[in-house]
Length: 184
Image 1 (cartoon, one colour):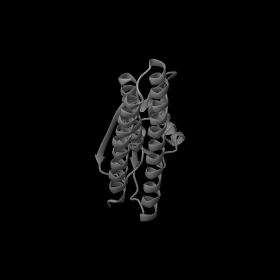
Image 2 (cartoon, helix red, strand yellow; image 1 turned 60 degrees about the vertical axis):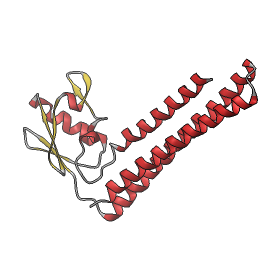
Image 3 (cartoon, one colour; image 1 turned 30 degrees about the horizontal axis):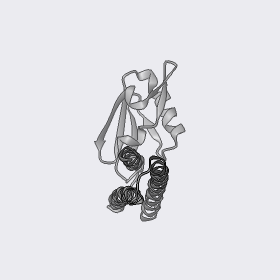
Image 4 (cartoon, one colour; image 1 turned 135 degrees about the vertical axis):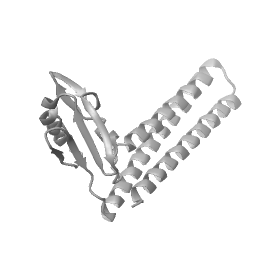
């Protein structure tokens, strides 16, 4: 029974971590190199993460600079960024590709906060689904093993406590990201 509880808690932890990872791809007006995490470039026939083909840096708060180790990759990187549709057009000076993040308007900030809240809601749904599955498994296993109703109820309560704690973590993460987005 305890292992079912531990498994459910681990899955909930992964849902929260997944949400936080997803938040790194949301532009908050500042240059964040994590926005490039999902971009892969064709490096001599192999799809390679952008960070592995050059130096990615943030020289100024609203600029990301990408300096490939192989200058022949400039066009390929530029094309990959355009294909990724991150909402920023790269500029290429022959040595470095720059991504300049425009200042966000109030309206765009509010849209991003809505998106963040939606991501948070999806994470909460995932956590609640994990709770439901865990309680189902505990009841089945409890009946099969002849565990008393009181013990089953205790494990159900433990699953609920874990769920509540993870929902709070999600709410805190959503609030922090929303505040970051709304800060000018």
